[in-house]
Image (cartoon, rainbow, N blue to C red; front, top):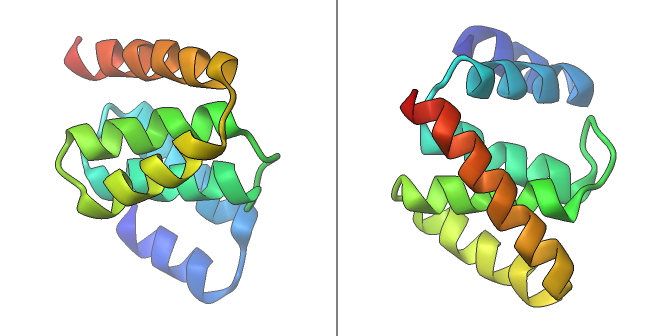
Length: 102
């Protein structure tokens, strides 16, 4: 997975990067790197449509797993998000967390 991800980054293939990160998360990976980078991709719309809710959810998971960078990213996006987006992001993060723990 890491080799494929680095090749996709090296080739500037944003869609493939996004697909590899999503696959890593679907495999119940608890690596904060994947969640933080997915958050960035969702926030910026890199390889996927922009989505503040999914960005916040993934930053939340990464910060829970100990990522200092994700804490900063979360705070930045949180301040720009609406109350509704914040609530939906929390629900989504809890949903993903349950999948990790199962």
